[in-house]
Structures are given as C-alpha cells and as structure tokens.
Amino acid sequence: MNKILYLEGSSGISGDMTVSALLDLGASRQYLEEQLGKLPIHDYRLVIGRTEKCGIDACAFYVELDESKPQPLRDYRQIRDMIAQSGMDEKAKVLSLQIFQALAKAEAKVHGTTMENVHFHEVGAVDSIVDIVSAAVCLVDLGIEQTVVGTLMEGTGTTWCQHGRIPVPVPATAELIAEYGLDMKITDVAGEMITPTGAAIAAVIRNRQMPERFRIEKIGIGSGEKDFKHANILRAMILVEDHENLVQVLETNVDDCTGEQLGYIQEVLLEAGALDAVYRPIYMKKSRPAYQLQVICKEEDADQLENIIFKETTTIGIRGYQAKRAVLERRIQEVHTDEGIVRVKVCRMGEREYCYPEYEDLKRYCKAAGTPFRESYEKIQKMAGDEK
Image 1 (cartoon, helix red, strand yellow):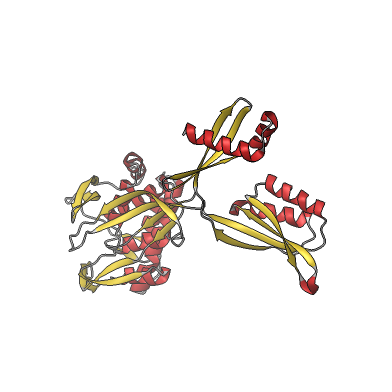
Image 2: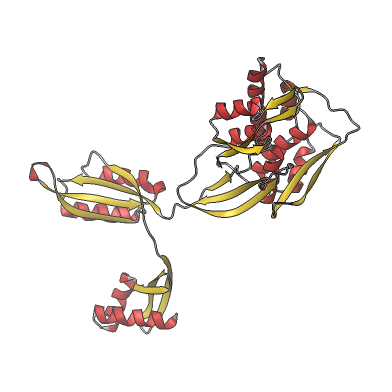
C-alpha cells in the first residue's frame, strides 16, 4: 500500500505551518533537533506546543530568535554551501537544497538577476532557513515520497516586506505558483496566506494527483501565526491508496488452440497468481468459432501473466484495462467434523453473513462421509452458522 501525504491548503501554506502539521503527524522532534544541530546557525530556539484556531486544536511550531543578535544577509550561494557541507541526513539535505533552489530561481526572476547573485531577505533569515530545513527533515523522517497538494487559498491586498509594501500574492509566491502549476484560489480575506517559503515547499514536494480511492490513516493540524476569520491551519493527511478494489483485466482472442492447451494455460495462470482466468466462446471474423481468454489479476502481476499468455498461446495481442470490483468482507472459518476440517468462507454484507464451504475440502468430506454433495454442503453451512 502506498502512503501519500495530502496538504489541504484551505488557509494557504507557510513554512512554519508545514512543519507544525508534519510534527502533528508524528515526525520526531528529537530527530529534528539533531539534524538542525548540524547546521552552522545559532542564536535561536525552537518553540513547539499546542494552540487553538477557531476552536480547532493544532500543533504550533515557532522559531524564536535572539533579538540582540543582528541577522546576517545571506545569498543563495551561502545557504546552498551551508546545507551541502553540513552533516545532515543526505535525503533531508537534498530536499532542502531543492526547495532553496526553487526559491532562488523565483527570486532571481522577480529581481532581474541570476540565482547565484540573488540575495535573500526574509527567506535568508535564520527562522526561514530553519523552517525549510525542518520541513525537509520531517518529510524524510515520516518516509514521505508521494505528495498531493490541494488548491492553495490566498488573500488579497498588500503586505510588508524588506522592500516596502507589495501586492498579495507577493511576487516570489506568484512566480512559484506559475512556474510549478500549483492550483490557487483568491479569497476575500485581507492579507497574505501563501508565503514564498510555503509555496516553494509545496512546489518541490508535489509529485502526484489525488488517488481515486483511499483511506485516511492519520491527520496532522499545523497552525499559522496569523488570525483570520477562518481557522488559519494547514491540515495534512496520510492517505493509503486503496488498491484492494482495483484489478487489471487482460483479454485476448484465440482460434487455433486445442481444448487441452487452453485447460493447461488456465491452470498455469491461476498458479502464477491470477485472481481468475476464464474462457468464453466467441465468433471471430469470417464466423470462425474461437475463445476469449479473460484474466483478472493484481496490477503488479500483469506483466508476468502477459508473458505467460504470449508464451503458452498463439495470440499476438493482449488487451489490458483497469476495473473496479466490489469485494465483501470475508474470513475463513474452520468447521471440525468426524471426517476432518472443512474450511468455510464467511462473507459479510451489512448485518448478514453468508457461508460458502471450500470446494476441495467439501469434496474430500463427501467421499469420506459417503453423503451427497448438496446434502453435505447444507450440513457444513449449518455447522458453520452454529459455530459463529
């Protein structure tokens, strides 16, 4: 099963919101502090706790700076070298560098300069560096490899930066949204909801679309510093893609195989992992009688089963497509008789259960007991129901 991170984006995204949400999902604070300790930056401390946004409990992550120490102005090259030469986990290091590279590219375009010469202001400060690196470390710690980013909500108006008052979304954020094709929706909320740091993180880690079917394994809530009329939170979910109800169907038509050959191929396919393999009579061109072979299998087994079909039949082409299947909840129950154990498949639909004795076990029971198949079937069904 594939674990997927889903960042909802109903209140935009920022670096601290992302880290808060990932910590709430279970990323290790101890591991985070160990990794941050390998960077040559000081004069700050992490503040991690709980807060409430519009009645919703959320994790709060904040980088508290030593205001008595002036913040140095760093360019992209300095930050890149700082991270590259650190002793951080290699995966977290690579991801951090990718995020800063995306930011540098956007800032360079906005300011009409090169990536190497771009100077970070807010993003080059200690708190922003810690936010980006922390997000990368938490993602690696959680083992996240697939990420879906929802529509990012943004406010309106203007906001302050080092250069003065600028429009929302700020130029670097707008550039990242455009460059990486992130979905954004402008709301009537006054203020900035998507920061360049948050946009860069979302842009770099997004690598897939929302799965068609999934279940939610865990939810993390990260808070933002600002207070809006809505809950200023980033909701992160771990989704588990549901492949149980998706199967691959392989089909081919054959008109020059013997019955014995077809029977043999069916057995080979079932032994190789096919969920089902059936033949149905058809008429091909020129009214020639033939058979259509249909194989139902798991997606990961499709290539192997295709090879078997090509090897064991005379076909030169196979159709393949994905299909949904509805599967009842099931379990195997053992019914103990004087003639041995008979396994029974018990399927549940709502409050009702249906019992189906396994054929090979029932056949063995019939021969040992000397009773007709139908009578034995009903007897084992009743015994299974009585033992529930």
